[in-house]
Amino acid sequence: MKNNQNMKRVIVDYSKLNNDILNLLVTKYPDGYGDESIISFKNQHNEIIECVEVRTIDTIYLVKVSKKLVNAMQDFEIEGDDLDIDIEALDN
Image (cartoon, rainbow, N blue to C red; front, top):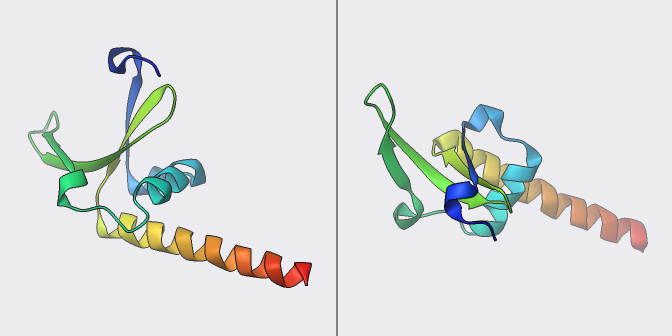
């Protein structure tokens, strides 16, 4: 894995999540994330930003924490479960 200093850092808002990042989140936090997983910092406007971190080989994603993020992770997990059920039904 690359040195953290060489990795690209990206802050991602809920509205900008794609399925790849959502999949990383659900994989890393299958039961949801807790307070110990949240990273807090101040932005250039001196506002406190709370994020959870997921990584790829070359990028660190800080995904802003919100109620919408929790719902998106739950919906993504449910959709994946529904997909597995449909595939199993087709196999029979």
